[in-house]
Length: 298
Image (tube, rainbow, N blue to C red; front, side, top):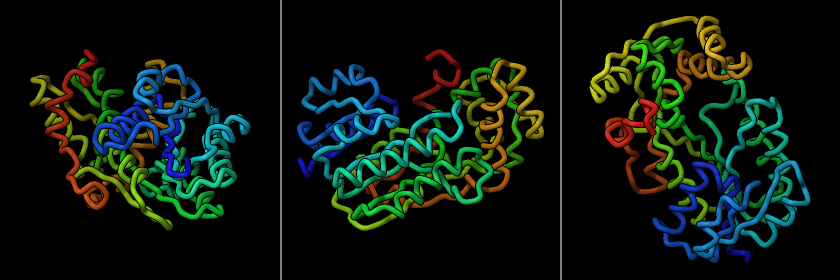
């Protein structure tokens, strides 16, 4: 199985779309694909197509040894441990070590834009993972520094649309967001490709939009008033806490606005085109197809 392609976190939203693109868009034989998850039963539909499904827990080294055995190329999808500071980096370091031990030839990792000296509170997890890859004996790796998903707007906009007010501390900073499905296609393309050596790409959308510009587009598309209300970081945190968000998580979310205000999300690149030969979906096109998730109806 040295030509096997493995996707970690395959039962998540991004992982499922990666599997879709491997099988449907890139026509990779399902027998070449290994999908791992802490919940392998959730991948029954892919198992029925011929994908090999294995249990894997990044906090169980023995499970990683079994899951990664016989794999040539591996996609390490970043885990989500916002409620456990520091756990993500330890998990990723364990995965990198297990991949090295298993003889994996190339690891693809989903990172974030500009993790060095970033205001984002979990940026050290991504930077530390990139450093672990660089320090490893892996023959090659590709870091995909993924910009934020358009889909992340579904966390804030339903409530904002209900009130007509979108509180932001981004101070006019731009967001070069991109559709999650585009990031999945890029990850699948690199995973199924033949790229060797060590590479870093930054995957952005086609344009950087401010919160005011996004609000205007959303308002026009949905026919609902939506005004951006500038606030401080502390006021933004206080508002989230007042609505039931635990303060540590609220501070993580608020750090996104701090990063935008510092210009950390506004860099537009053509790396997505370099990888896929396609242009990323525009925000206008994505919005037209996804109105319901922004109103909480989906």
